[in-house]
Image 1 (cartoon, rainbow, N blue to C red):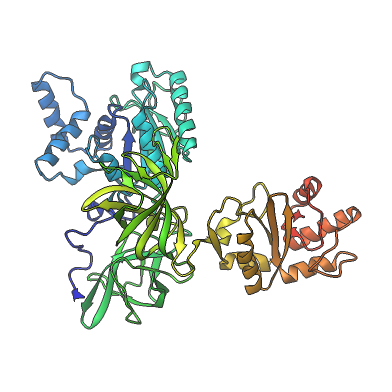
Image 2 (tube, rainbow, N blue to C red):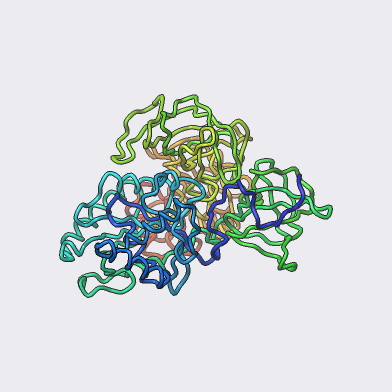
Length: 596
């Protein structure tokens, strides 16, 4: 416990999720990372962005032009980045306009400068968490090894907003055929690592074609310019559907109050909210915010650094996470993860290292390397490996010395990404795939049911067939209300371990389910008891919901009408599925227009 400094002023050695945060509005600015093979034009693109968006001071531009003239060389925007790099090496402060650029919509910060020796390392650290990425490809060379490696790292980091900029088309006469060929090559590789480019834009960073203004030299291209594509992106800290995560940076004592300080990484927080501190599991209520310039503050959102007081003084420390009681992170002492290794020496099974996730920093042990993968070809080099080599990626298992709060990456980016270090040196990073619940002692994933529902290939489907971990369900209000309104849901899975959570769900909420095995696949239809009884009353000969008879084919039309009335789905959809279904049409199996 220590005296209270300024709440928004972190310690000098505090690892910040974005070291430029104080220089721009966290809610309006977008953080981007520009990646690609060396000499494909990253420096030129950044220089051009600064100039064309009016973010480069006129005196700086004129200074660089004069320098090039004195040296007898043609001006190139890449020289701008060279000048900035020289200033960095001399520890000269760089002006804000030279670090950021701004469009009519918002400011942007470029997380990493081209040519930085620690480029890959900075990409995977928490301080380089990007909202979006630019993958730059030379049209004349296509994808190179480094391009593929950088794209794979984007996949590993879960960056989903990606612009592919096909550069240097001026050297190929702005050939549409070449652009299409390179676009196809890039698209295929991105698909292989689970990525889809949001936009693919033909550009000439040198001449400015399609950067800010549309180029007359690409009349065949009808998509957005590079800057228009950027402006279409959103911050990954969107509050929609993302639960509260507030990693505690420190706890201060001031005026006989404990103030819990940190930055909200996702979701939002209000006075009066019930919260839980993970991994301890203690709950309480938010009493108020401590601020210097807004004493009446009652709400904060993702990206804000805050100090809060609680109605109860709970044990908490740096690394713990304040979260919503409805959707807390899992307390875990073991995770499975995808890991990218950058250490000089191989990472060996059994090796101890430091795992840093949000503000937590705990000792961890590499207990298993299930797959060792070449990061540029994606080839599996070895299964059940003993070590991981430099620039390789791997699927691993890590065990922590003490529990931390974590989320699978596909559920929450901010608590699903981590860095590992050996000594004081960052040596790799990765994303959490599954967590082992510290209380249950099993590989464990919590699935929010309303988020898991899909409509293809079957209506109201919750597909668990790819789930490897033990699961629990979060039956959120929206899901339960849909059941009360007459919807039903089809669960498909392959492991019998997934049946008990469904049974508990049915027991806790007074639901009815029917179970069926079809070859290697298992299926359960879940619906409200009243819905099942209502449908059963409309069908002749049905006496026992626990063991329903097969509905004769002559009653299919009557059954469809019951389906339509009870589940509110289109008639044609129900009939089509009934006609092609390999299932018997049973008395209490209705999945919102899907009869089984």
